[in-house]
Image 1 (cartoon, rainbow, N blue to C red):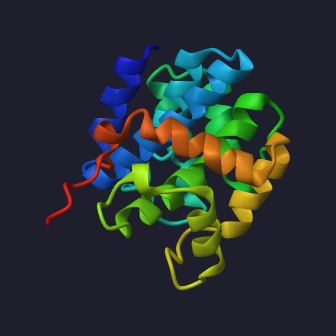
Image 2 (cartoon, helix red, strand yellow):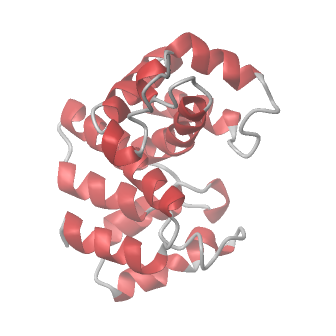
Length: 190
């Protein structure tokens, strides 16, 4: 399986731009960690792209991602990628053991949160986001309330990185693909 095949599976099951962009944002972060840690960038990218592919057809837990896994198996997605996808949800009982599994979990909620923070910046841009603004928004429980802050902090801890460093790393990864993620921003009006 290559990245293009994963993208085609994602687009077959995910119709909304927002969820597709979330997959791309998680991919940006996970692929950057693959480069940092010497992981297989294509494998890590495929995992990130497909981690929520079934969310629109299985929007309730525990259906997601457990009911999606057999679909991926039927499409020839390798077992290690399917296992990593299952491990990104605590309730599946699949422990996060590999570096890929830990990285996917660490990047999933954070990528969504960074996107939300970008949207409230004056230019709606990831280029305006910094660690202090993210940490401040994390304390505001009314902001992006669907994002699990405990998963963000647990993800950094499981990955063995300082939370602020993890946030900064993912901001940089998303900045590198800002246009693709819809986070390049809008020009400021005078």
